[in-house]
Length: 50
Image (tube, rainbow, N blue to C red; front, side):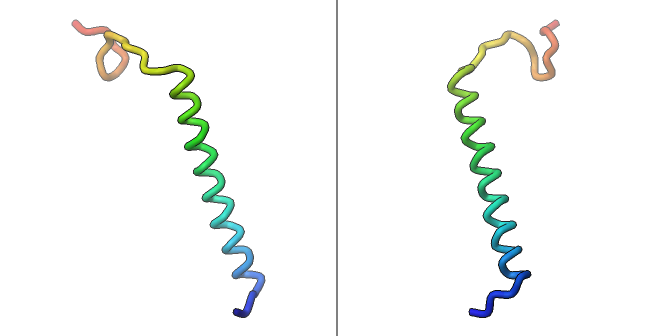
């Protein structure tokens, strides 16, 4: 396969995007485990019920 600079840059871009989203996913999972589900008795928008 002919490897042009544009092809290499495109593959690198896709790999960087995948790495970013995997990193964000791992961060969210770790943060969710650390904080757990906090039961708040507030409404959807952070206001206390009337």
